[in-house]
Length: 77
Figure (tube, rainbow, N blue to C red):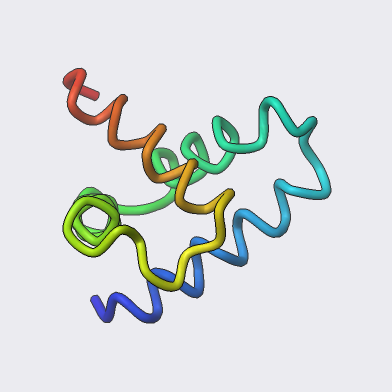
C-alpha cells in the first residue's frame, strides 16, 4: 500500500484519539486501533516507515502510536 495513504490514515486516526482519549492514553489507543483494524502488511509497512524514515509525515501522536504498536508487534502480537 502507498505509504502516503497509510500516513494520512494514521494521522486521521490519531486526530480522532487526540480529542477522544486522555492525553496519557491516546498513543495506546492509536496503537490498539491499528492492531485491531489494519491488516498485518499495513502495520509492518507503517512500522518500517517510522524505523527507516523517522515517520516522515506522521504527527507526533501518530508516530508515538506506531512506536507503541511496534513494541507490541515485536513481543509476538
